[in-house]
Image (tube, rainbow, N blue to C red):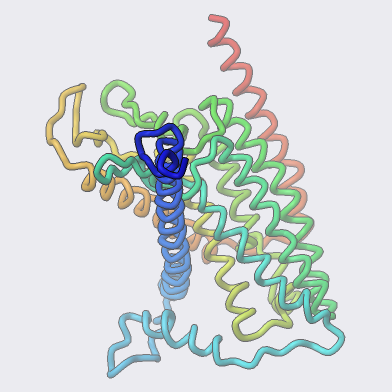
Length: 389
């Protein structure tokens, strides 16, 4: 009996060997997922830091100033990079963490974590490339390839409001509480318009999978024009971009932290690393909005005329490329598009004046929501008419 169990040719031996292979494959898949998650988290946090530098230098250009350029290492300031990427984080990390008297210590500590976490994990379902082949293994360039990616995005982004509410309520400060109330009302209001815009996108592509949406935009209309979502859903693009800026609470929708009215709003009573987490959340959310805009309406990682085998035109392969180089070009294309929309949001931030709160709510409920609803109805009618034809 013992010999039969150890004999690889026996039935039990084959079952044991199969289980061992399955376990090895599972460990490999888990390792690949962990590596992808770590890489994406590092890229997102690095993007937040770079956007902080772009915002400071960009606002300086808009306002005809020099911008951050004082801190240097051995005389090298790097056009403000040392100031923004080294000196400022060091200052925040070494600052004293102050908790106001009467504040809820647990919730005061938890609020910045709850605010930053959803923005980071939203990138889990955003595809930054197609497929990378390593030997015989196909690695999807997406941390979590979910068939219901849009539902995941909506669920995760809706959690961000809790960080704002908890930060305002736990601080034991009237200005913070008012900022938290403003933020919750604003984010919930604009989520409705964003959700309806995404409904139109889902109907257009016929899938909830973000990778499927990007692949559907790989065709060329007439052989020259990329079939990007902006051609099919221009109004949904505008609604998603505006609602996304409102969700990230930046000008002209920064009422929850309006310094002329509320000091710093819901994070008035924060300092040190906690303040840095709120600060970083804004830029990570800017990246999320840019990534979603790129994915839904501008082809995601798609580069015109670039196929899985190389550059092609009219169905003929003009330049064959190895898979690793194709994957690298796809990731680079995605990053360039994301950086462009990040820059656009920063430009809007420093170009438009702040809304009054009543104007903000009126615009969300009386303009954005009806337009998003009308767009969804028209999209459904057009798709139905094509199906019947």
